Image 1: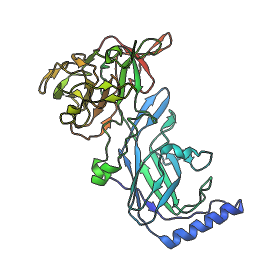
Image 2 (image 1 turned 90 degrees about the horizontal axis):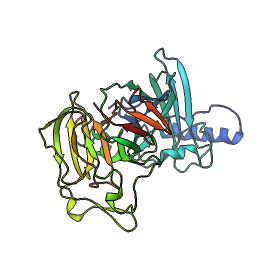
Image 3 (image 1 turned 180 degrees about the horizontal axis):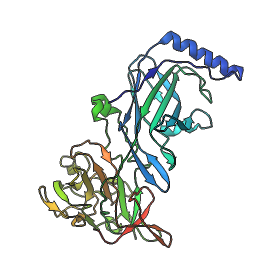
Length: 389
């Protein structure tokens, strides 16, 4: 993986407000005396994909920072400058300590202790369609933990920079694995739980293993036109509209893994999902009953949390797009009956997640059915597909 360039700096950017000038000077003196080039940053994935949606461009990746020194720091600002292919500045953004609470708090824990790796969910995830996302220059500003925060960082004890080069992604389109009226209950937007998987433990094990299989995952549920997920008592799994619905292969391919014997979860009286005690040995990753399909372009579809006894395929079988392979259930690491769907570059776990785009479906917007033009779906979308391929 490519590490970003490290700079030790304490910079004085303008000479207004004496208190801030004093602060910048203090940082400069501290930085010069320290000279500890111990912070390193990488992007994961290293070359993120650009998704297109409603005249917007979307980016989805993390910034991992490793502190190899003995000094504890706090992240006080993230700056981004975007350059086109002619190396001309197109736009610039900054997230800092300004505000109460400050907007930079959105990225989560900003403390970087000695000998620690921090996973920062980079916050600049949406751009206009007319911006050429050729080179993204990130600058992360850190101060020693004992220094008081200031609204706008005029200087820093440590600064790390990283250039990121995103790329477009146009894979073959898949079929939606559920038919009827479907809600993307949780997708892969900035606020989704799929997006927010902390990769620090994997990075410590091996930098190359700092990947997220669920980076572009979707949780699909069937709903009523007014958005209801269940009818009657929600503590009965059978009352969820998704439960027992047919799951279809997103595209033709070879089944490389199939599990059908994981027992189903139950709801406690307080609504908490509980897995049977005997399910852990058979399901250590929490996938539940599931099917993995390798497609012609070598991408792998993962369809999880199926009903026991419903899986119709086994490893080595060939399936066609749209073929029923099982039913929605309530197994594995599942809080309620739904279909978890994600696509990865390979069949191993963990492996890097990649986007999946779909064909022959409509967005449902009130009484309107809007045909999809690029196949992208994400959190909150109401979608409908009644045939595919």
